[in-house]
Image (cartoon, rainbow, N blue to C red; front, side, top):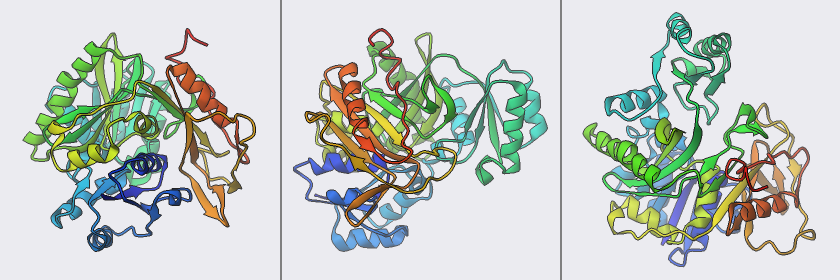
Length: 424
């Protein structure tokens, strides 16, 4: 089987790495890939969807996997399907679950799926009046795609009003913030739950926990994610069942009723309050960095998972995972998430810890020049550790972090802290 992966980040690198170990996969192509993916894939510099479909037809590629949200929201799946090409991902209409937070919130309301109370508006005065009715803190969200950064947790009504004004004026997120959501702040703990869907059936993956804030102790600004681990002990069989019955199943039925059956990855950002799941948001792709901890836990060949979902045959998939834990620590550039950073050569010191078989690196923001890798800014790479316990996996991930050097590198030192509060 030959496979094309659309994307260039650590998420796509991790999918490609899983496929590289899959005996059923002959060739992997990546569009565009990054400076490290050419170790096991061929990078393709094609961004136009029609031309990419031409390439797939020319090379007789069996399956395309879409990693990021933007191509899904822009309709790549629709273009490929019109040409009879097998592709894993959600349609343009179904991708509105992520592409528009307002659409998503209204969908949850229509199908009685638990979520925070909210209003949607493009009027500042209406937003300000609703803010005055809420307890502090509160949440302000831009409607459109903002690379995981369009959510502001405001600690005061004044801060919420300032955030709303900046979004509505276009100062914060451009057109993505011209319409906003104001909602109550939910106090609990967050989980990332992923369901692979084929429009009717689904397979649920081990729940993960992401760490959005830049700094230790969940301080600093929101980012695209600074680390994750899976599976998390913060979920049990009863909570899984509630999520399936109250969230996943009504969502799939609702999307069928809307005439937009959901296919691909349904990424559910949840807040758990007193054992009850409440939906914070939907995304229509794997989380990044959650994908980086889920792929190495996958025992079933990755090609089967994606192929069965894309061909609407999930009911015949036996999905298995290794009885292990995975922890990913994001190593970011000096100025992330505020501004770009000067490219810096990445040096890996292999002399410190020689026995790190249960670790690997997933590269993201890198380029290759003259055989050397350079950090180009943003989230540069992820250090992933596997183990028989979360602590063992975490310790291995941090050992690997200590071996990687580039100017200005930064990372959190407390990934998986909620799971390890009593096990330091």
